[in-house]
Length: 208
Image 1 (tube, one colour):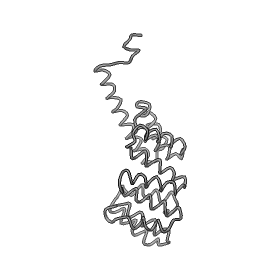
Image 2 (image 1 turned 90 degrees about the horizontal axis):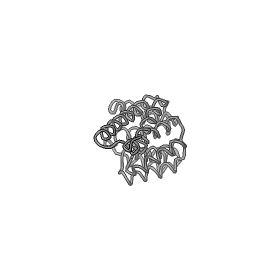
Image 3 (image 1 turned 180 degrees about the vertical axis):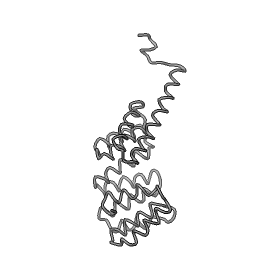
Image 4 (image 1 turned 90 degrees about the vertical axis):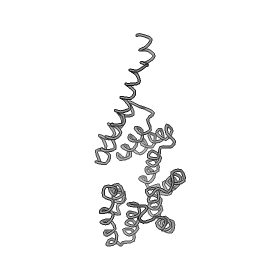
């Protein structure tokens, strides 16, 4: 083998190949995200695996793989992959959010709430974080804390998160009629943005 092949290709050709691989990896990550949204979780994992193979240290690719593993309920594997994503990019919000979400899905609500609160201190009071903190308090049986978190939600600034926090509160309180009205309003106003919020309530059995 030539010295050049042994050392790796350099120069314009190498730059072109790197950019081509980055573009392919980005498309694979986008396809994985689309597959997850369509609940094609095995296909999502396959795409994400391919993206990681091209760029092993890419946090977006690692996060996509972790997200697919979460959907497949392979939580221990997902946590390792997502931790690697965070190690490669400590500013990656999606990977850190997904790590906290694993705790919530495992019904470790107090631990999850702590992690979501930590994310809030790093990334600000994002509506989805306020919603998750409320939901963890409610599901963890901390009613007073849940009500404080609910009052912290702002309409209309917090968008779909505000609606679904109140929907969850009404469903838990047995106010299904009010919850139904809020659900219809949320879907009319926020459309596709409501899908993940609705699925969260379906997963925990509050919404059928």
